[in-house]
Image 1 (cartoon, rainbow, N blue to C red):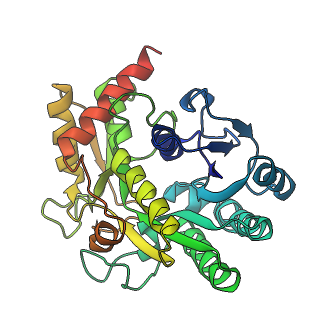
Image 2: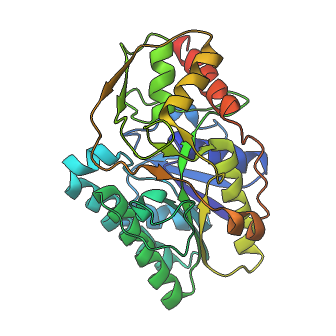
Image 3: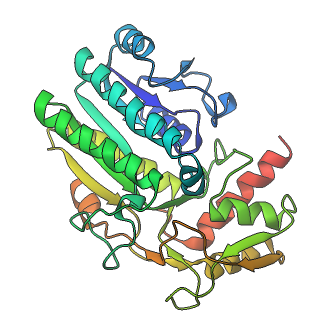
Length: 326
């Protein structure tokens, strides 16, 4: 029995690989290294360089390694980029995921965990948003993930493929042991960009919009530490192995911080100021997105350990400093 981790050389996927290795699981990683890095994958874990939409390659992997569980991280994840290149997102995130699911069904894979996103909710009707609230994405990224969710649910019902869909809120931070972290130089996520600015790697941090109906006019997000997120995946794996029914769950802490509050936390961690400029709203940004996570806590027995903004940004800062001397 082995677990296939697609996108296992990327930010979240590599954290999952370390988590599984710590639990003595058999793992194989599939990653095309377009945004992932070989150095993030432990040397003890087989890394196959290729695309998850390559049906013949994936079929061979599933057979050769005796895979009966898949954790699917590989995807394009930039909201602004999805607005510029929607067809690329529908090809990679939707069509290729359909191919992966078909390959899994044909190979008799029993369990499938899918990396989804809070972007499927669009602008939530209420905050915090629950899994039962309407899904109304307004970006190609959100739609590409929602379509993949639908295909997985329908395939699961037709072919007895048990699955957990995890909708991530804003993932940040790095492995506390500094084994892995966000390493892509062109990242667009707030904490990564702000940390790079604090360390002088970027000239300034651009804040998009200061007129939102929030406590300080900037967007509010539910930031979840990446290590807590991968522990939710471990919980999902154990849940399915124990015979749990297929389910869709939010992954967030249930409280949000504004862009300006995040900037202040990074200033505290870095013990320095950082240059900030203010611009107009960015297309695809909702004012406030915060999760309810009671179902994940109950079903997966998930107990976050790093639910603290200062801890999250400190780990992100430590990792960025490590990259500078790597």
